Image (cartoon, rainbow, N blue to C red; front, side):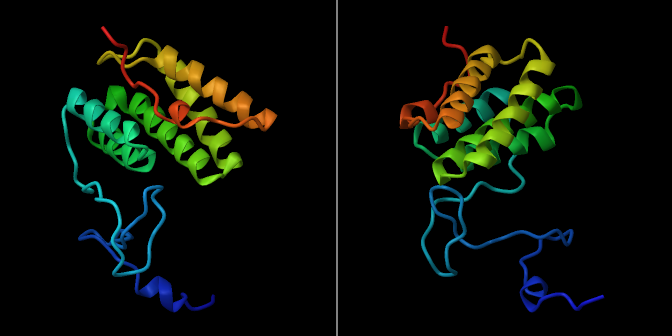
Length: 165
């Protein structure tokens, strides 16, 4: 067995020993060199009620920060009620799919948008006014555009998470 690379030994770790990258990140969630100024990070221990989670994630999406929105939605997936885990996971995967589009990674976008679509579809009618049908339709539109090599507008990467009343 080969020794672990020196970089792996120096990885940032949380109190439980899990790898955590404390380096600053750019608007698309990519790590920047140490000492750089990046966008504000989402706390690892974020725990908000569903309405606040959706509002926060929506503000981030509206600002073009899909990666950060994914982190907010992922926190809800990991900290929320068990019965809603697949819903929040689907929403987090949707945001990561958008992040991959922003980064120019078509393959990653297809994979995550497809997973998100399956989770949102399988969950059925979503609570908290989450617009699952609208998100599923947008995911299908984005998948078609990716498959056909069509351009995707910035507005398509700023979906509404909830239905407007």
